[in-house]
Amino acid sequence: MSSMDYFIGIDIGTTSTKAVAFSATGQILAKQACSYPMLHPQENRHEQNPETILEAVVSSLIALSSQLPQHKPVLISFSAAMHSLILMDANDIPLTNCIIWADNHAADLAIALRATVKGKKIYHATGVPIHAMSPLCKMWWFKINEPAIFSTTARFIGIKEYVFQRLFAKYIIDTAIASATGLLNSVELRWEKISLTLLGIEEQQLSAIVSTTHIEYLPAVKHNKLTERLQAFKATPFITGSSDGALANLGTGATVKDSMAITIGTSSAARITTTQPETDKDMRTFCYYLSGGQYIIGGASNNGAIVIQWLKENLLQDKSPYDEFINLACSIASGSEGLILLPYILGERAPLWNSAARGVYFGLDVKHTINHMVRAALESVIYNVYGIGKILMEKANVTTIYVSGGFTESSLWVQMLADIFNLPVIVSTAEENAALGAVMVGIEALHLSSSINIEIGKTFLPDKKNQLIYQRQCAKMERLYALVKHEF
Image 1 (spheres, rainbow, N blue to C red):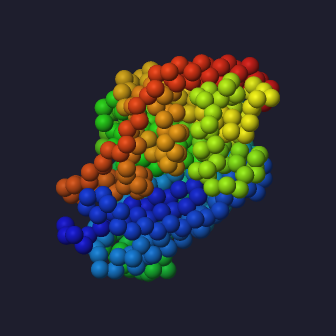
Image 2: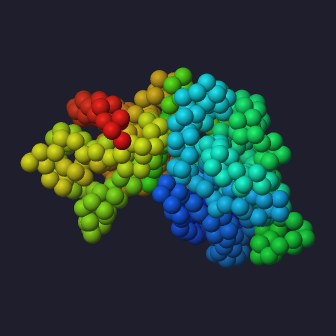
Image 3: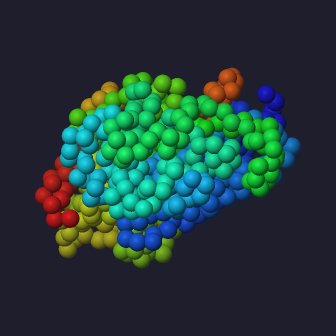
């Protein structure tokens, strides 16, 4: 490889697609992002136009190549958000929009299935919690509520499969994305018969399963306008890659022994990496395939920094910059003088798995101010992530936490996490972690020697005094939820 070579990671996310060009050492050379809207046709419906996302992928690639005209692309490897669903007809035309992870219209069905013996069998076979986010539950909703559409569906796919079908004229799915559908046996990495029987579908209606290191090339014949527009990459290998959550672990360096990865962006998640699939007796955690025989075990919360955005923009209608708004909490002592927020403004996945959960401020007193409300909100997001993390710490001896996401821009917020978990917290210096993780998988696929070095950033050490305060507040938050959950 020469110094003029670059490696592209494509990250297909919920709000945008990013194409990132990395050097052989993992440094960002250029990046391009294309954003797109979320559609809400009805209450609890959250969808996107798959053609808009496809165009974002193509446009970002073209724009990236124009930024590096003298450089050679070595590979293009993919990361994508999990749990999306598109119903396709026999002519490869979408019958639906792309129904994303946040869609909640299958909530009632998921709750009913979760309580059954069959639901438990599906969870333990696939590692995917029975929840409205799951493509399995979304598909079952269509079977029951939209039988005409369901019966005419030739293929059930996700957004990455849609992109690949348009580029390569074939339906393929990598094991990592497949393992998040509720349809894949997590041990054997094949389509799970219990899930197929529940839905009454055949394997032929799902994509062909390939490895995360599977390689494709654009067709030699320009079979459509998309591949014609991408002729700059006609000799470039395209790698299927993995899922965004799994690749974030890889891209932050949190695959080392006894480590946990925590990401807090709009939503939040905690994950550990293992070499064996493992489910939870109480169905509280997920188990997804990463790549190379590794799995991630963890939980994802709906309520990360979106809680702070809601508080700032909707409730308080504050116009100040975000860093100034968050720093209002600095004047308030740990524990917010007894004020607690149940942060479930979008319902909740892990650790509650309750789509009906909602937000509650508790303990308001005449002494409390806006600053207290901000601090309580910041703390509540960390309490909730801790609720996921302590389940994982039952399964592994975690000694270090690696963190990434927008919340790392606030030292106050990161220190809260170190104090609540009572563990050293290392801030990842790597930008665009999922895209970098995708490149690392691509390098493995091509059997290239890697010189990517993920540098360790600032380390935050826990404060024992604060930890005791936070533990009391965290326990109170759990008791409060237990008291009010039947009222949602």
